[in-house]
Length: 184
Image (cartoon, rainbow, N blue to C red):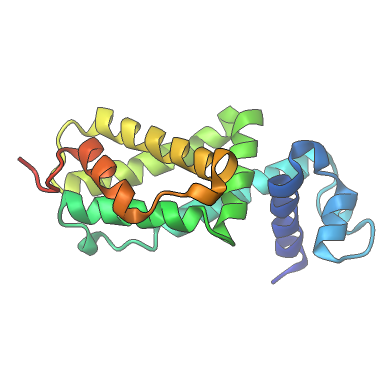
């Protein structure tokens, strides 16, 4: 891992644990275990540090969605299972840290995070089309809203009461098209 990558990961960790108010060059140096001034040498000001976090969140989101090969998505049930498993992954460490940071950045920088959200919608709409889902535009937005709401709830309101994939599947199937998991 390069020094820049180490610092970016440390910055994501700081945002996830301390919020944006805690994001300082000194905090990033400490989290990265590097000498004081290291973050400032790579990220000259706070804006460039924030840009580094935003870029990393977008990169990691694309990376996570790329792990789902399209050939595994043949039905609504397949897609619902993938989404339920993704929710479980994003609410479990180490990916829960990424989710917390993304949620914090979304509140503070909604326009900058919007491109990542549009990327999610694009991937989701493509997968939905491959699975035969109808009304893709409205359903993809409903699914995305459910995913974001579940992530927020699971990481803030009720972290000890996360829903299992078994509990999430009927909701996701309903949002995608029907309760049986097939296109009717």
